[in-house]
Length: 464
Image (cartoon, rainbow, N blue to C red; front, top):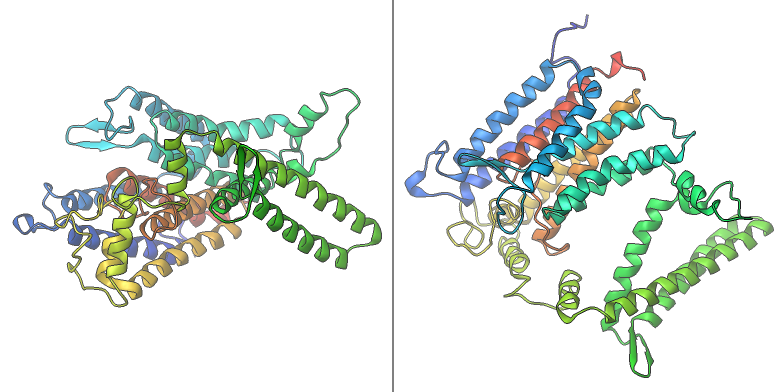
């Protein structure tokens, strides 16, 4: 017999255990990284680890409140919660800048980042709205409202500026794509405004999000090839990498056409051929445009792009943080140097900046080596896989959409943060979930996860 008021009923214990494991591992790493023999107590509030204990306690208390509150509240008050987070994002713009960004609201000796909590408000409102509309009967209004919910906080965060959090907000686009949101209504409204042109459906609208990421990928490839011998030379103008990109696109198009021609009828073969040709021409035009724009940039703007893409190195300049973190990770070797044995990434060594926050993975990897890093990554992957299972078992659309929102936010933070530490992605300053030192990130991630656990625990009671 299920007890209606038992807050522990149907909790996904594997996910909760993952959360507790990561929080514990993160706290021990912060303690090791920032350890000071004169303040050795774990609860010393003068040290980062003492404050982290406090933030973990606050987060667990907030998690308990989440379970005590009826789950329908989150859906009913999604808009007010979203509005409050937007108001905080506006207020923070008038606060004094810290490290060049208006991102913190100070309270005594503590501060919070409203941008972290804006993720919660956006996830709740987006889930609430999308669960009320049919993806099979989309209108331009549906498309605009869904994207506006995401774009409003993004614009406010860009004004701070906080590029890392802006990137994280693009994770919601994958949620829209998973739910089948098509951009057809918006694109059709634009194209049908021209006399004599009428479309029933646009391939661009249906596949807008993957096409967008393909365009970004193509732009990056164009710039990466710019340092190779493949290039088109015109008197007075060098178009870097264009020939190489054309060859790559042609090869890809040939493979796609060959695969389609083997599985399609004669009529569909022609259609596939036309699609490949159009795609080839548009891709070539895009590569050419990127090359022209890149050549027109100022030298310092080119330098920043080249640093991000790894085309040049500046180990002691703008790329200082990334190279120091990579050195610390590499120094851990296979088995690591042992707990408190980090010689490069500890706060005392001052070799890796922000080693207890954005670069928390580097001291962990230095202490526990490749073996420990694999275990940590395995815990995160298990957590993400568990969230995916939770999302897919929901019968209520609101619950499912929210679960995917949480999963994508955590995945972005996990992948980008570890990527920064090992040199795979540019440094954009975002924390490792449940691991990095910081009150705002710990509380916001905890609330996101505990709301998911609460909703999932009541999945049998909610059918729509």
